[in-house]
Length: 139
Image (cartoon, rainbow, N blue to C red; front, side):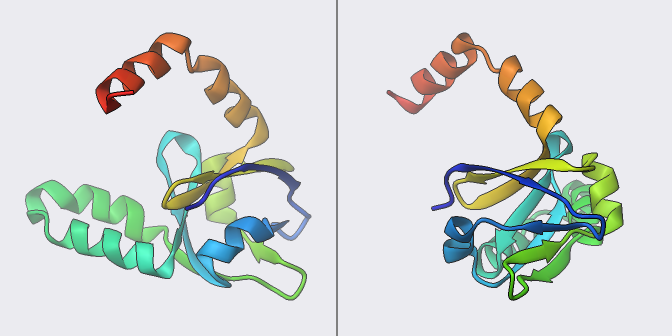
Protein backbone atom coordinates (compact mmCIF):
# COMPACT_ATOMS: atom_id res chain seq x y z
CA UNK A 1 0.00 0.00 0.00
CA UNK A 2 1.31 3.44 -0.95
CA UNK A 3 1.19 5.91 1.94
CA UNK A 4 2.92 9.08 3.10
CA UNK A 5 3.67 12.60 1.95
CA UNK A 6 7.07 13.62 0.61
CA UNK A 7 8.34 17.07 -0.39
CA UNK A 8 10.89 17.33 -3.21
CA UNK A 9 12.10 19.78 -5.85
CA UNK A 10 12.31 19.42 -9.61
CA UNK A 11 15.66 20.17 -11.17
CA UNK A 12 16.07 22.14 -14.40
CA UNK A 13 15.86 18.92 -16.45
CA UNK A 14 12.48 17.95 -14.95
CA UNK A 15 13.94 15.28 -12.67
CA UNK A 16 12.71 14.63 -9.16
CA UNK A 17 13.90 12.29 -6.45
CA UNK A 18 11.21 9.66 -6.05
CA UNK A 19 10.72 8.51 -2.44
CA UNK A 20 12.33 5.15 -1.73
CA UNK A 21 9.39 4.15 0.50
CA UNK A 22 7.05 4.44 -2.49
CA UNK A 23 9.52 2.73 -4.83
CA UNK A 24 9.41 -0.32 -2.56
CA UNK A 25 5.81 -0.93 -3.72
CA UNK A 26 5.97 0.61 -7.19
CA UNK A 27 9.21 -0.99 -8.31
CA UNK A 28 11.96 0.64 -10.37
CA UNK A 29 9.67 0.97 -13.44
CA UNK A 30 6.18 2.40 -13.29
CA UNK A 31 3.56 4.38 -15.21
CA UNK A 32 3.15 8.14 -14.95
CA UNK A 33 0.05 9.80 -16.43
CA UNK A 34 -2.36 12.70 -16.08
CA UNK A 35 -4.50 12.46 -12.99
CA UNK A 36 -7.56 14.15 -11.63
CA UNK A 37 -7.61 17.50 -9.83
CA UNK A 38 -4.54 18.72 -11.73
CA UNK A 39 -2.04 16.19 -10.37
CA UNK A 40 -0.19 13.26 -11.92
CA UNK A 41 -1.04 9.63 -11.16
CA UNK A 42 1.67 7.02 -10.67
CA UNK A 43 0.86 3.31 -11.00
CA UNK A 44 2.93 0.19 -10.55
CA UNK A 45 2.99 -2.05 -13.61
CA UNK A 46 0.60 -4.61 -11.99
CA UNK A 47 -1.86 -1.89 -10.88
CA UNK A 48 -1.72 -0.32 -14.34
CA UNK A 49 -2.64 -3.69 -15.87
CA UNK A 50 -5.63 -3.98 -13.51
CA UNK A 51 -6.78 -0.47 -14.39
CA UNK A 52 -6.33 -1.15 -18.10
CA UNK A 53 -8.48 -4.30 -17.87
CA UNK A 54 -11.24 -2.42 -16.03
CA UNK A 55 -11.28 0.31 -18.67
CA UNK A 56 -11.21 -2.21 -21.54
CA UNK A 57 -14.25 -3.95 -20.06
CA UNK A 58 -16.33 -0.77 -20.29
CA UNK A 59 -18.42 -0.03 -23.38
CA UNK A 60 -16.46 2.15 -25.80
CA UNK A 61 -19.25 4.72 -25.78
CA UNK A 62 -18.58 5.34 -22.08
CA UNK A 63 -14.83 4.76 -21.92
CA UNK A 64 -13.38 6.42 -25.00
CA UNK A 65 -12.91 9.92 -23.59
CA UNK A 66 -11.31 8.59 -20.43
CA UNK A 67 -9.13 6.21 -22.45
CA UNK A 68 -7.81 9.14 -24.46
CA UNK A 69 -7.19 11.21 -21.34
CA UNK A 70 -5.38 8.47 -19.45
CA UNK A 71 -3.52 6.49 -22.11
CA UNK A 72 -2.43 9.27 -24.46
CA UNK A 73 -0.47 10.96 -21.69
CA UNK A 74 0.86 7.78 -20.05
CA UNK A 75 4.58 7.06 -20.04
CA UNK A 76 6.67 4.32 -18.52
CA UNK A 77 9.39 5.77 -16.32
CA UNK A 78 12.48 4.15 -14.84
CA UNK A 79 14.22 5.27 -11.68
CA UNK A 80 17.86 6.22 -12.29
CA UNK A 81 20.82 5.29 -10.05
CA UNK A 82 20.27 8.43 -7.94
CA UNK A 83 16.60 7.54 -7.30
CA UNK A 84 15.21 10.14 -9.72
CA UNK A 85 12.61 10.03 -12.45
CA UNK A 86 12.20 12.43 -15.36
CA UNK A 87 8.76 14.00 -15.65
CA UNK A 88 8.15 14.91 -19.32
CA UNK A 89 7.40 18.55 -20.07
CA UNK A 90 3.80 17.88 -21.19
CA UNK A 91 3.00 16.26 -17.83
CA UNK A 92 4.84 18.98 -15.88
CA UNK A 93 2.79 21.56 -17.74
CA UNK A 94 -0.51 19.72 -17.15
CA UNK A 95 0.11 19.51 -13.39
CA UNK A 96 1.67 22.98 -13.11
CA UNK A 97 4.91 21.53 -11.76
CA UNK A 98 7.63 24.14 -11.61
CA UNK A 99 9.94 23.66 -8.64
CA UNK A 100 8.46 22.40 -5.37
CA UNK A 101 6.41 19.22 -5.58
CA UNK A 102 4.65 16.91 -3.16
CA UNK A 103 4.55 13.19 -3.84
CA UNK A 104 1.90 11.31 -1.89
CA UNK A 105 0.88 7.73 -1.45
CA UNK A 106 -2.81 7.21 -2.21
CA UNK A 107 -3.42 3.48 -1.60
CA UNK A 108 -2.88 1.73 -4.97
CA UNK A 109 -1.31 4.75 -6.69
CA UNK A 110 0.94 7.66 -5.89
CA UNK A 111 0.24 11.25 -6.92
CA UNK A 112 2.58 14.09 -7.82
CA UNK A 113 1.32 17.59 -6.99
CA UNK A 114 2.57 21.12 -7.30
CA UNK A 115 3.16 22.06 -3.67
CA UNK A 116 0.83 25.08 -3.71
CA UNK A 117 -1.96 23.10 -5.41
CA UNK A 118 -1.58 20.33 -2.82
CA UNK A 119 -1.77 22.79 0.06
CA UNK A 120 -4.89 24.39 -1.45
CA UNK A 121 -6.49 20.98 -1.96
CA UNK A 122 -5.83 20.14 1.70
CA UNK A 123 -7.35 23.47 2.85
CA UNK A 124 -10.53 22.74 0.89
CA UNK A 125 -11.04 19.44 2.71
CA UNK A 126 -13.48 20.13 5.53
CA UNK A 127 -14.16 18.07 8.66
CA UNK A 128 -17.72 17.61 7.37
CA UNK A 129 -16.44 16.07 4.13
CA UNK A 130 -14.26 13.64 6.09
CA UNK A 131 -17.13 12.79 8.45
CA UNK A 132 -19.51 12.11 5.56
CA UNK A 133 -17.03 9.73 3.94
CA UNK A 134 -16.36 8.00 7.25
CA UNK A 135 -20.12 7.48 7.67
CA UNK A 136 -20.34 5.96 4.17
CA UNK A 137 -17.51 3.58 5.05
CA UNK A 138 -19.15 2.60 8.34
CA UNK A 139 -16.56 4.08 10.72
